[in-house]
Length: 99
Image 1 (cartoon, rainbow, N blue to C red):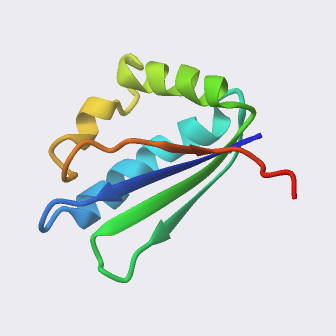
Image 2: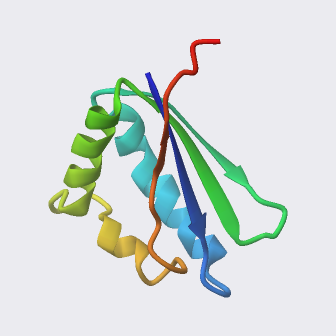
Image 3: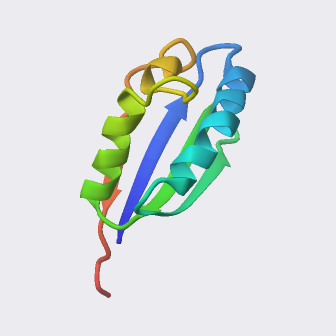
């Protein structure tokens, strides 16, 4: 299993728009093959969301990420994040430490 951490910092005044976009998009993410779990946490700063995801593997997540880049009509894409977030979001991958 691979843990994926994905941090999104909303642009000024766009946190509600970001949350609305995620409410629409995350059911598809949770249903994507290889996704075990996905939880969203809010930072007390009021503008940062942290997505914590459990996937079969990094490769499974990367297949999902490639799909999300161009998912087709009716699905939210990575491009839709651009006007809502600061910077270029990048996932962090963590593997079990075996401890």
